[in-house]
Amino acid sequence: MNIVLMLLSMLYSCVFAHIHLKLEQAPSSHDQASLLRHVRALSNQYGQRVLPDEINLPIDNLFNGQYFSTIGIGTPPQYFKLVMDTGSSNLWVPGQCRPTVCRSHARYNATLSSTFEKNGSQFSTEYGTGGVSGHVSRDTLWVGDVQIKRQLFAEATYEDSLIASGSFDGIFGLGHDAVAINGIKPPLYRMLDQKLIATPVFSFYFGDSARGTESFCAIGGIDDAAYEGAVLRLPLRRKIYWEVDLNAASLGGAVALDLNIGAILDTGTSLIAMPSNFAALFNRYIGATQVSSGLYEVSCHKRDQLPDLTFTLSGSNFSFSAYDYILELENGSCLSCFQGFDSGEKTGPLFILGNAFLRRWYSIFDLENGTVGLAKAI
Image (cartoon, rainbow, N blue to C red; front, top):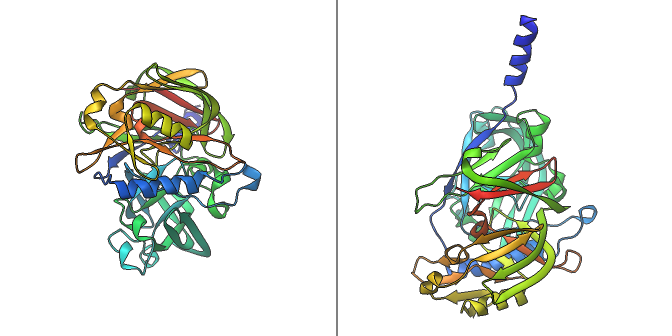
């Protein structure tokens, strides 16, 4: 009996119940030009999305308000700052990129890894103003202290200058496998296949730098110390992105919308994107004026007088303040997070809820049960 118990204990110890990754927030790069390009990229990403059996489309994001974690690839590991992104499903890092624009980033070198395996198939991800392209390779992936063996990933040998100017090196996609480029199995699915995590769950806590609270992503579990009150579980509408039902939205007592459409929770953006007519309505109410296509400027002083915004998701209300939905830029001016974009007919109208919303809510993404859980972040 003692031998059996010992063997069971050894077997269980091979399963990591919880991988805790510190997230770092990149230095603020908010400016009107980059935000405008990001609005266009969101439109490209979600604007023509179709149902799972029809998907053969690129993924794109420009990651304003970037949060990244340090991830290793290879043996010995080569380390990269990767955005942990629920809005895409692939892993890519800079390879031996020829353009000078990507030389400011860590670059994967296959010749330095004893576990590298050549694949060679082509990889391309289109963005609103450019893109990333390269080829697929296979190597050991290090997530915290956990090794994911023989993970397929993309080596980017070309990066658009806008992508290359970001503070991150690449992307760690946490989306569904249905939208993975080239049908590559995402890292989360590989962790499950190799029994490296106990449950198919990951969660995010976005800290407040003003309060000195750290951000983190937990893979394979939940950190009960990161939230208070009950966790409200919201069922997914469609397993394309992390999309839930948005029943209504209200801003103070003056703007109230009955919606019954989809809302995608996207950790790769700081924006709150929505159909253009709704964005115009919200921005008019807060006194924002359009300064360029898709962007609205608002007086920073108004934040103290403006009401909370409340989204009703699957019948439950979630609120956040004007200090969340108005971004202060490096030059001291402020822009509204309410940005207009119009999705394709097959997808229908969508809201994209980025970090402006998620900073107030501990978010739990449950692959097995097809839900997103939200609880008030501490």
